[in-house]
Length: 348
Image 1: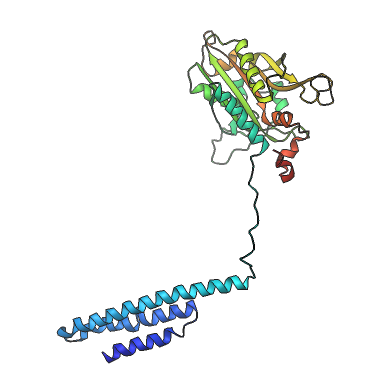
Image 2 (image 1 turned 90 degrees about the vertical axis):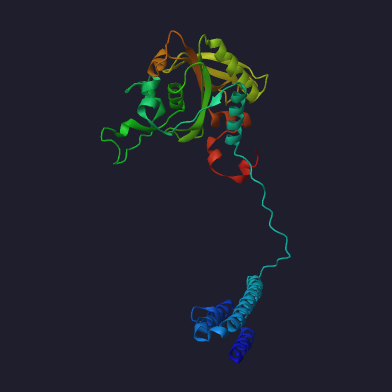
């Protein structure tokens, strides 16, 4: 009993001299470690007479709990003191007000993209997505753009080299970064049965770089297929969309054009929002600005997905989100969208 009392007195004396977490850990090991003083005492209880073991066991366990409690209290105290020293050593005035971090805003392209998607969703269109790295078949062949077709030159495609684990029959010219979101239309038609309507927003890639073009940009394409779908449906949907985006008084004009995957095809123009149709440098004196392309789906596209061309008709359309954003906010250089100048982005 005298030994146990001496152990407790020694611990109290030593603990009063501890000044660091490291010193406290050394004290813990000395008394409670595998070869510690208290642990050794508990292990040697078996050497005592049977009738004395409970008495000494109780006293040793009480000593162990006392030491554990004291060490825990000392640890909290030392950690608090070290934290205060750390703050003082870093010369931080905790009474100073914090630095204001202004809230972020959505990018203007994202804002317009969301507005486009919400407008078409309100008209009953679903949203479909697809891969940005595409097979040549979906990006060109199924859209009535066979190899060596002149329309391919307009898109200056990025071709992707296949990895060594790919099939040996896959060549570099079989894999592309999609040049439009039209491949999503093919994939969407293959898993649907008309009637349906959906849009396909996403990133696309072309080898262009100037004040009005970037190698990566965003497109939204749409498709509506069913029985007795006519060009009048196309005009109604696109006029409603343009009036939602640019205002109900915006004039709209449809003029003939050519796309390999639609027939007949049309370019859609709006009255110049800068000069109100009077003619300026932006609209090249015509009073009109091109905003998107559209047309009735070509029968060969329906044949590629196995649709009955005598039973089903449909229309498709596509637009560049950056171009619409430039027109909506009167921005004259597309590169501003990707320079990350906060002064520019804060305007929106």
